[in-house]
Amino acid sequence: MLREHLEEIESNIQSACARAGRSRESVRLIAVSKTQPVSAIEEAYALGLRDFGENKVKEMLGKESQLPEDIRWHLIGHLQTNKVRQVLSKTVLIHSLDSLKLLDAVDFEAMKQRIVVEGLLEVNVAEEESKFGFLPEELWGLLNRLCQYKNLKIRGLMTVAPFTINQEDNRAVFRKLKEISIDTRWNTLDNISMDILSMGMTGDYSVAIEEGATIIRVGTGLFGARNLGEDGQ
Ligand SMILES: *Cc1c(COP(=O)(O)O)cnc(C)c1O
Image 1 (tube, rainbow, N blue to C red):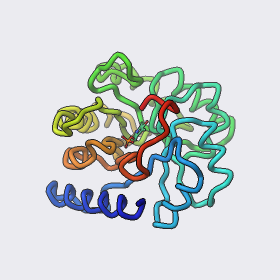
Image 2 (tube, helix red, strand yellow):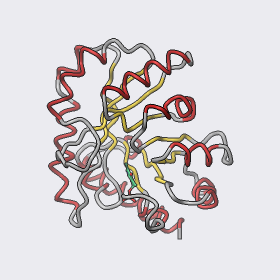
Image 3 (tube, rainbow, N blue to C red):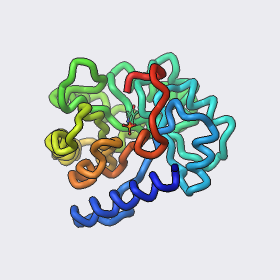
């Protein structure tokens, strides 16, 4: 099953890249393995996947300790400040930096651990009540603080687009995130880059790629349905 799913996703990625005039290498697939057992991750690993996304710290750490060291773990879910310490050295990229308090905590803890941590600012582009993330207009108020961070490097933006049946419905959301990422105001900060755009999930990753996604996060399209009740997504 996994092999067929991966082949289909890969073919969709290639088509979307071709339509957008982009190279296949410009898009990275992250396998969202939340709620999936270690055995499913092992199967995906055997097919060559190395980037996995988890939304809970405890679950990520539990799996990380049982799986090969060359897996790149991405934290994609809301992170509580009291869990920052445990997770920093275990993740290659925190996609879900969604509050000033969290940004401060990550930079501070990374300084204590003497490491540099990379992360993305989560943006609630569609301004949904139920979603985490900065509202687009809130981002510019962060610039003064972001430029002071020495151990947290912002690499770009992430969004969780609204749930939709028709992926075209999210095209405007993805286009807006791309527009925000190329705003010249970021250029005033030399410790920040905007080279990563993490957007697009099972239902809408093709459109996200057409609009500039450099990372897509695919869960159910790869692993099949998640256990109900384990999480809200
Ligand atoms: C669960 C989740 C995904 C993957 O969702 P699918 O629709 O299963 O592909 C992607 N991003 C985040 C932040 C998630 O929580």
